[in-house]
Structure formats: structure tokens, C-alpha cells
Amino acid sequence: MRARVATAPEYPDLWREFVAMTPDYEFYRRQAGGRTIPLVVLEPR
Image 1 (cartoon, one colour):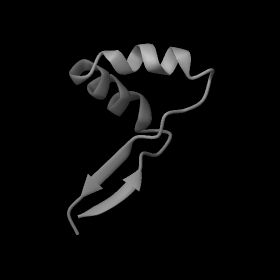
Image 2: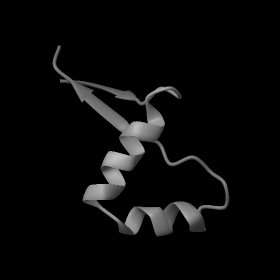
Image 3: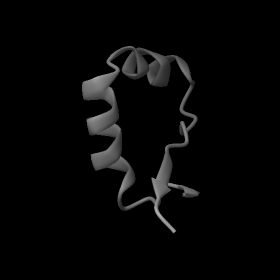
């Protein structure tokens, strides 16, 4: 496996998928004060 941080273009779609599975993170993002919460993408080598 290879891990990388999601790029800006893919972030919105990945965030929507992530929040659909884990809704509490939308609350966390609102509380984060404008900071971007990194999303890590795992890819096969």
C-alpha cells in the first residue's frame, strides 16, 4: 500500500463519501475553525 494526502481536486468528492460513512466528522470540520482536515488515500503499489 501507498498512502498519500488527497489532492485539492479530489478532496470534495472524497469528503462527501467519508461524511456519508462517518457523519460526525462534518461536525468536527465545523469546529475545526476553517482548517482543512487531511484525507489519506491508500493505493496499491
